Length: 247
Ligand SMILES: Nc1ncnc2c1ncn2[C@@H]1O[C@H](C[S@+](CC[C@H]([NH3+])C(=O)[O-])CC(=O)[O-])[C@@H](O)[C@H]1O
Ligand SMILES: O=C(O)C(=O)Cc1ccccc1
Image 1 (tube, rainbow, N blue to C red):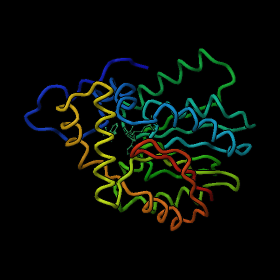
Image 2: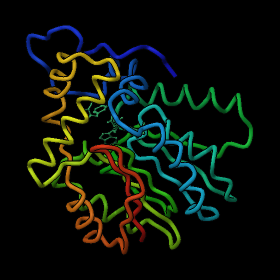
Image 3: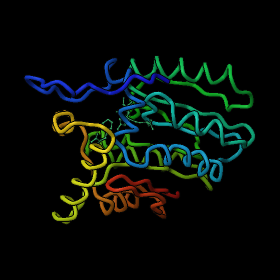
């Protein structure tokens, strides 16, 4: 994957446009997500380990909002269950193009990787096949809030017994002081990763209209309302968490 450093917000912008997963973002995305999301490498690697425990023979593993395919590749490396295949879906043409290049490269370097199909499309319009693992790794937060319950309901309906949804998200906190403290700690994380105050401020303004995090309580209640039977947080680093939801 590209090693280009993220300097997208380093210069003062007269007006900060809404954040979009366009070609500029795609070019710096691996660097951006690693320096912006505390725990991201740990979550991605362990998603493969978790998926291997839930994968059922002859089923689909979905990576929804797959970006450059980091989660897809973790699934393909860790899951050894008979007849499994991965379907990666993203609605950014620029992401999908780079994702296909990356996964083809991995195919030529490693044997025994699960087969994969990369679809350019909206996960809200997807016809789900019977699935044992569904990964929503930092994707639900970009879906319009009033669409989230229905999407989770469709995912729940597609999940086979023994399968799981793995949902990673940035968290909001209902307690005002808790929210302020964790936001400050996240800013300290970004600063420690080399982002300037200007970069942090401009990125914040770019994402505020397009990315709407929920609280852990909201996630839990909505997952139960969508028909999931159990919700288990398995990872949290500052204001970023990952949950396992069981059918
Ligand atoms: N409706 C939609 N349909 C399909 N894709 C969508 C939609 N809305 C947004 N996306 C896509 O969801 C991805 C979210 S990034 C996921 C990181 C990845 N999972 C990773 O583990 O590296 C999260 C982040 O950048 O914080 C982008 O590629 C969007 O194009
Ligand atoms: O950068 C942030 O503040 C985030 O919340 C995470 C993020 C990471 C990559 C793209 C958009 C948001």
